[in-house]
Length: 279
View (tube, one colour):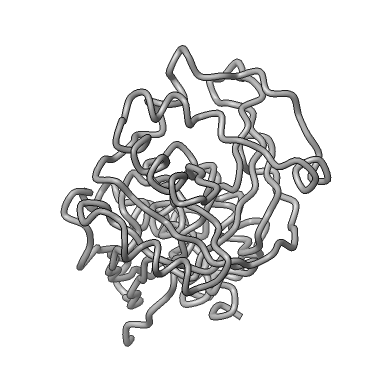
């Protein structure tokens, strides 16, 4: 069968509060997810011999560790499908940036192959399967901006403004586990309601830990702040972002940023482009 192209959008955590640590080591969180009109793209070609291969992908991630490949094999095992796939992962979301690249890739594979293989799983089943791969996978499967609780899997769809953002990624990769295992991480934020966030906003409890360990992230935040923007960090970093008045301001900001930082202007989205393609 021919290769079809599927989007895997980036996400932002508009805030991130850590409420506590569970007995199993996972953290109880509150966060707000919004998608971006910027992301990876996956080429997927079904096979009839059951083989799952990554025919293109990032050199720094071994195929067996790639969440896109792991997602395909998880769906195959869960449904007993005899089909396979050739998967090409075209990366635009930097690795270790807190923008959800690997999780988005995994969700796109689950949604795409569920349709291409004719598995017939509904969104709830796909999201549950995705949760086994990572806490952020379900929001990408569901494809709606969401207020998230639990470990990030308890999702309530929300409608938000869809502004333009300037997103900067300094040249470091931040491992999520390092930040969440840090002894100095704040783990006692009181729970808030969505209405509280709309009224007073929120913060990212991971920012002090990440900026102390990765000074380039602190520099990027400071650079945006000095331009009069409300600079935030997404997830555990390294990406930082600022809401802009319009597309022109976002693009001017990115154009002025230091050359050693990756950056892009993107619009916030309440609905993932993956869902529109998946039907």
